[in-house]
Length: 105
Image (cartoon, rainbow, N blue to C red; front, side, top):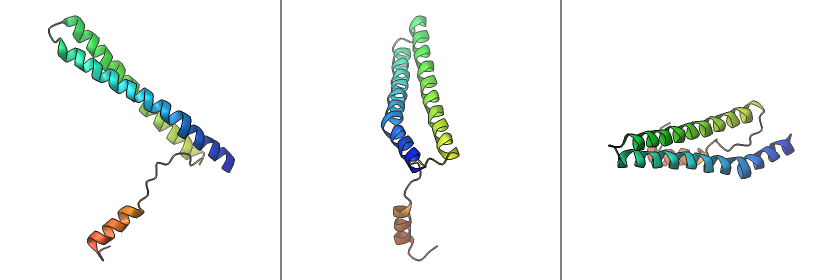
């Protein structure tokens, strides 16, 4: 099982995560571009329509990429691959709070 988890972890880290980041960024940039077009020519009905369409498709792309991230997380949790490093290291936070609050628990 360790080799399968390692292969899945490398697949997610080196292929899927960068692709998701690029597509999510493209959706965000498409949304911003549509917002700029929408605000630039508020008087023009055609420009507003084009801007709204760009914003809708940008939001759709970001939603799809967020859904893909959730599906990958669900598969990772279901099959116990432990390929995602979503669990933050809380040791530094615990050390900082123990220094800040002293003996309080």
